[in-house]
Image (cartoon, rainbow, N blue to C red; front, side, top):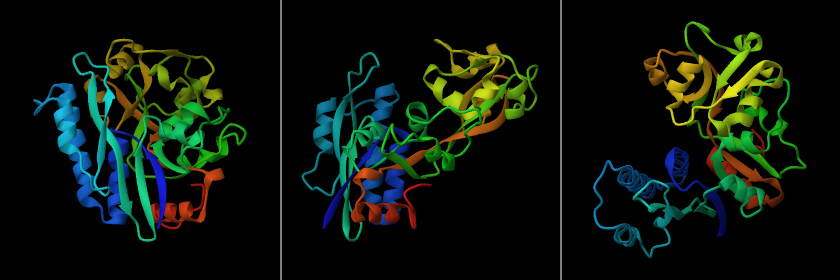
Length: 289
């Protein structure tokens, strides 16, 4: 039986989306639920919302299992004061018929694929926009457009499909700036646009260079992002329902791009077994979305 290593995030919403998809196709619900519940508990401890049962090394020992079909965990340094270590996902082997899927936790799955360490991996579509997607005059608004914007001289990694765990990058504004902010509004707008600093390249890609004329970026600094957008008047922020944005008096406008966990493939590492795993995870798929 062939074992296919797949790079996955170590924690958070993207990892949960991956585990739920794997559980759905590989009869691994118990293992997936165990990882999700364990990491949610550990996150609550890190945030101070839960009292720890023993120190971090005791808990790591308790979670450990010699069965290779059971999840493994490791310790990751956490930046929060008083929480120098956090337990995160490390490894899980799942049988998928003719092949074994070996999920391997990585801090940067996309970059691991770029370095040819894995043939397949899951990561946020945002990382693709932030690192390798070309910025053009026309806006980029869907996953299906990603591969066409990747320079083949830059990377061998391509997007296969998304998991549907969508949180949209949405255009927000105060009512005095725009009542229903959308792309057409941005084309005529000139002034400051509040965004998270790490999303500068991403926003340029999903808005397009034509709409960026006359726009300058502002950053939240230490303020809550939606509060900062309200003070600037217009901005781009990740939102599911928009309820917290409305709490700040903001209008939720056009959904510009989905922040979604995607299956990535380094096509130079593709084999029949790799293709089989991709089809198992997403049905009948090609090497692009």
